[in-house]
Length: 213
Ligand SMILES: Nc1nc2c(c(=O)[nH]1)N[C@H]1C(S)=C(S)[C@@H](COP(=O)(O)O)O[C@H]1N2
Ligand SMILES: [Mo]
Image (cartoon, rainbow, N blue to C red):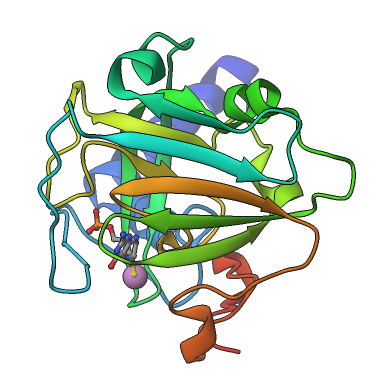
């Protein structure tokens, strides 16, 4: 077969497969959807039954622990930091995933630089205004897709989804991202968060179905 005909034949085959939804199925069972997850187009809400209402004038983000310069940022100070956007997939341990979430806010690495953690700091403990907490190894937080997000899809993060600001760590199950975030603490020793003390995995890798400890 000539190369031209081969290419045409492949193209027709690809179009047919796409029409039959093969691409979508392959994506669901293949590389993009972690094992045991189902794709959702909605955006379920998971919280502790409280959605704190925080006026931006009262909002604070404290960053402390083993750092050279602890800070307590106001809403204006936080928003004056360099802003980034990142599109990522969202995987909840209760088996739903959402693709192509466009988050905007401040990169974790920016906050890390701002407070200059000591070399002994190897863990991060996040606290939310609702009393939620979660812990993550510092090296997991330093990927450039880890954000303290204030926008979703170009609009402010809604209260139900953790506004004014929530943490996003795309490579881990979503419980590792604190909604309504209020404090970020750098620690030398790991300290288990809300779900981690209740049997959820400490490492939370969706690709190995690392769900419960
Ligand atoms: N403050 C706070 N953050 C939280 C939670 C919570 O209850 N409180 N739930 C976690 C869980 S289990 C998941 S799956 C995601 C859910 O985010 P969503 O409600 O925007 O879907 O937030 C995580 N962060
Ligand atoms: Mo979750």
